[in-house]
Image (cartoon, rainbow, N blue to C red; front, side):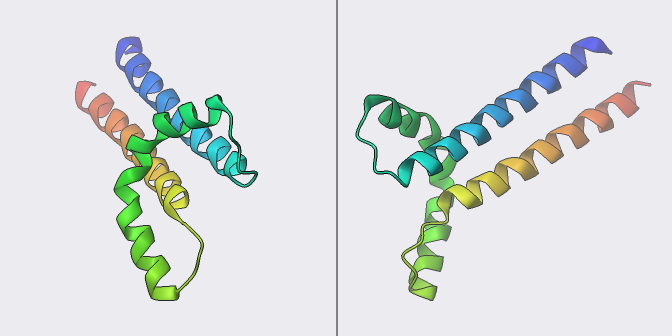
Length: 97
């Protein structure tokens, strides 16, 4: 069913764009950029990484490490979401045929 595949492929591409934006943000943050595109990128990815900030802060306090793992946890979470997304597609496709 091409319509169902198109919907799921579009969702997967969206998740890929978000993951790529998070990776670009991580690399750019090492250089302490002060240009407008960096702040726009941060505004774009914040809704996707903010659910993982509490977990990252707990780990930072527990290990007394100055490293923020928020983006790393977000990448793992979005990758898992993409896998579940495609599992749902195959489940729905199996129910239709």
